[in-house]
Image (cartoon, rainbow, N blue to C red; front, side):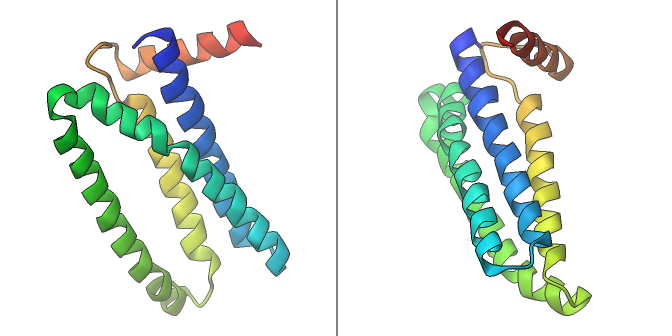
Length: 143
């Protein structure tokens, strides 16, 4: 990936997943409705920051078949939404608290960060470790 593409993929998506983790986890521990709404707003803002890089990645790896790759990503998201909608009441009945769902969702977003860093574009065949080093080097040169 070029420098601009790397910045978009790892910069916006990484920041978005970080905000999503922070907001979702905060929603699990706050005690007021106002704080919960603020936490959800932060989480949703973060999630929305990952949308554009996700679609761009589908185009990058799919090339002429990017529609099929995008459809597969969209279908996986729909299955995730179905599972999530059913997991919330099930986890509440099982544990007796609402926070369990949000802590698991935050952990899944941490997993998403790791998956995101491990993804490779067709233009970049570096190992995940090399991509982590590229990201870290780019951060240290901009600070």
